[in-house]
Every structure is written in structure tokens, then in C-alpha cells.
Image (tube, rainbow, N blue to C red; front, top):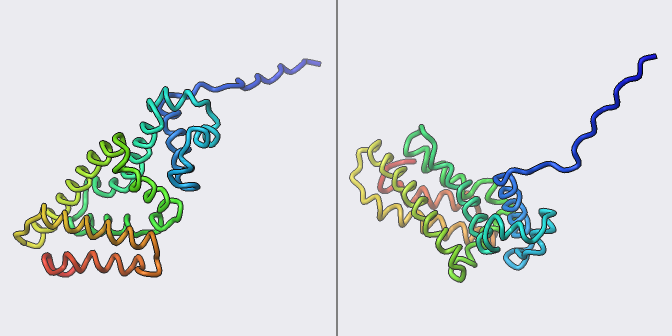
Length: 205
């Protein structure tokens, strides 16, 4: 009787690419923020969440603050992805922004805790402040582009940079109040307020 060859055993360890390792650490940081806010964002808790050694955070991000900046970049990148669609009208882009900010994913308590923790740290953390300035400029530029497209579609001569500043300020303020206490303002009320700011300038949205 012919003996069958023994099956090859899988390697015990798998080499992980640096990009994959960075993404894994960022997701661990997000989980710690969602669970415990900024107080939960510690080296020990992040390493326990990711099941890695402390040295990997320094190796990939330089410091815990570097990882926090990368976490912020990831969160805002997911939000701002709605501004980078290659097709669509200015109106659809504005609607996408409002839906992204006040949609189901944003309503998740873990997501709200992450944003509140990040916002609370920006003024006191130079690495995070630097990342915020970069990403806010991207955010404002994207909103201005959407509003410029909307103005062209509606044949409106508008001060787009000023309107973008007012729109972003309203969105951020409404989101903050909604996240702190949704009994005071609902997501639908917040959406409606955003449209009511723009409709006197651009017409019915």
C-alpha cells in the first residue's frame, strides 16, 4: 500500500508588511478611543488591543502622539472621501457631506467618542494640531469646490469661501451638540438646519 505524503504544515509565523502593521495599530488605537476616550489611548492598552510589543508603535509612528495623528488622519479621511468622488453635481456632494456627518455611521457611540476625544486633544497636542490644520484645509477646499459647483449649476454669484466657512461652522456645531445630547437636537433637525442655511442663497435643495 502506497503511503500518502504528510501534509505540509503551515508556517507558525507570517511576515506582516509594514503598511498592514500600521493599519493594524491604527485600528487598535481607534478601538481604544472608542472604548475609553483619550484616557484609554495608552501604550499598554493599544499594545494589548493589537497584541504587539511597545516598540512597534515607536518604530512605525515615532511616538504615541504620532499614532494619534495617524488615527485622526484615518478618521477624517473616511469622512472626506465623500468629497473626492469623480462624478456628481454640487448638490449631490453637499448632500453627501451632510449625510456623512449625520448618518448612521456617525451616530454610532464609538465613532462619536473617537471624534470627541480627538477634538478635545487638538489644542494641546502639537502633532495632532499639525494634522488637523492639514486635514481642515482639505475639508474646507472640498466644501468650497462643492459649493462652487452648486453656484454654477444654479447660476448664482456667491462668496463661496465665506459660505463654506459658515457651513462648516454650522455642521461642526450641530454635530457637537447632537453627539453630546441627541435629545436636544436630532440628526434630521441638524440636516434640515444645514439645508436651510444654503437654500436662501442657492434655491431649494
